[in-house]
Image (tube, one colour):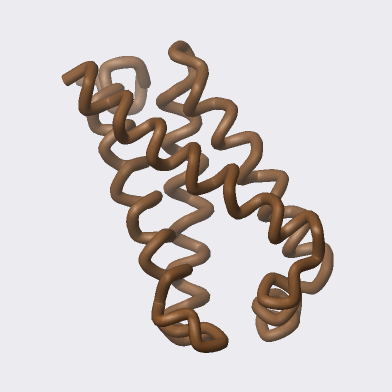
Length: 125
């Protein structure tokens, strides 16, 4: 289980950290996404900051649960944006961004499930 947790943590953190460059550098595809959502530039910077915090929390053993929860929340928002406003495929990416969001969500939920004992909300009374 420890190996599965670390694979899930690393997968989510690497993807989150990799996308930060595009958000913080103002890459055209990121700008397009947040303009389409009516949240450029504050949404791009805000989601980038949340993803940075989530990635760091995932990489610290004691805070993995919170990184998983934050990552899951951000990815639910991203997937929701794809399903409602952006579409699965964005600017001819073949659905790559959507797929990465799904991978991060599944990885984050795996971490949360494996670390559920660390959260008082998941423990029986």
